[in-house]
Length: 495
Image 1 (cartoon, rainbow, N blue to C red):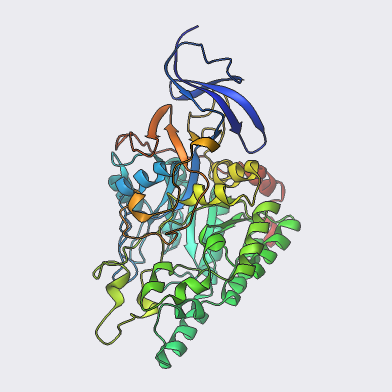
Image 2: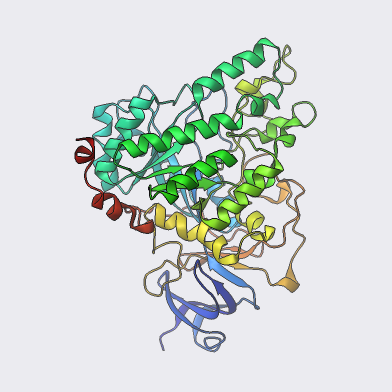
């Protein structure tokens, strides 16, 4: 038999649908063969890895990652480049990320932001990557470019219902959904009521309430629930065009999403670790410390965490992403402390750069929580993201001859190192992690990207530039576009 490039033996393979003891043979960057456990141990290969009875899962697919974006919200600027962010990804078992190419309000095209994102990423990533187009200026001319975006392998876009620099009005959202439906492009929606949020912020500031904890006060659950309902209603008007509601934190929003799904509407939902492991109490840390946890929507309470976990178990949440959006805490020019002044020693919550890091800790945190089955863990962190964003079965699977050899080998139970999360041990460029001090039960021992070991026993061994841009197809999850086409055209529905 011709020598394989890599053989992994004595492992327990976990996919979205199955658990089994298999050996894996890799050739030319692809999964070449799955065989009964230890049957390949003596087969010739350039390298062999004894998994020692540990779990082997498909590489993580994180489709909500912000890296090296232009300054759009006051003074804040991401601390991670494509180099440092993708380096952090592979250290946490993530082999594919999908980042954003943001269009600013003044830009007359969608293609230029995509070109700029390519320029930043090309030759600088440790893992494979793709892009979503972030649309903030949805003119008819710009939306006419969606077909060209799809030809470039960009099959999803994101819009916002809040933030002055990005917020779209309802009529603009309808236009985006209409064009996206025509081109079979998935629309991601950040659902918070921006107008009410601004009013509440002004009320708090009038009372001189500026501390980080008031960020959560200005964004109560009702704002997320209302906007989620409105997004679902708007998508139903465009003949039930598919949407993905991102970073859901609120029980009422979760209930409304479940209701729409039960009615057969193609509504998908995403949640993130911050809504499983953090609470609003974290924002109430002394002084300015609470700024480390400022993200939107904000973390809720422990009862909300229970609802989000249940949503993962019952399928309400299709995917679990990181929403990695890092701003250094101690940076007084571009980071969290940029909003601190002599007059405002605890800053102003309105101006705290909004986001937290998490691409490296996503998989270990959720894997270790033991609150969802391992097959569900693979489903929401790898397989479903790959399916929803047109990467499957190249990514998110272990199909011989079809899937890229993107794999994570975890530690066997008897060889676990000290696994308390410490920022000093992470590989992003940020000066803190919001998960500092949390103990996890496991961590990736090896991360393998297209057959190459890129993370080996807590050491980066991959090379910058090995990561490749991946052109994406249309979503395949639940045959969503086939179902949409069977429902008839938007024009027919309108008439």
